[in-house]
Image (cartoon, rainbow, N blue to C red; front, side):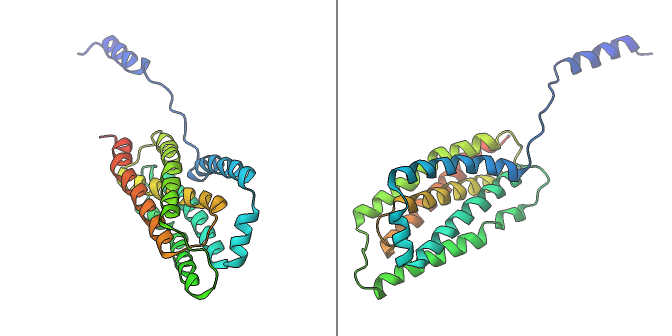
Length: 217
């Protein structure tokens, strides 16, 4: 008959190194925490640039204001989807959550491009100005993506690549939203293409690198 004392000793050894696991906060609450960082950055930019330029652009071209709203909605929904997907057992349908905001963002931005063909005196972006937008979105997306990945690594994403795509979309949309504060000219085709390129690069980089960082394999 096995020695009961040896079994008890073995169980005691296995249990001695266990550390209590701190329960994760709900996805919406963790999303709010990350959004507070984005809001803090927005506050700093508003203190420097003010709101007059943004309000002037939005009053002259309301479609640009709707594009900004779409970018903000995409930011919130993509971040929420990333935190939800990081919890085992959650369905992949969460990845569709940012779609309505993204459609509004893209559609309104497209109308902004058409407005330059209709409204006289519209300031069309130059190639140099568009490249500044590209640098801005990528520069701000890097720390925002890194922060999201650090927060998500406390969970256990079973779909690391899909989760990382949501991270990239949230970070790029947040950066595009912040750009509205200091975006001193109206949308044009070159501007829209530059924004699309920046978002694509950020999402692709997160899918490639963030997927590996979030994987537990």
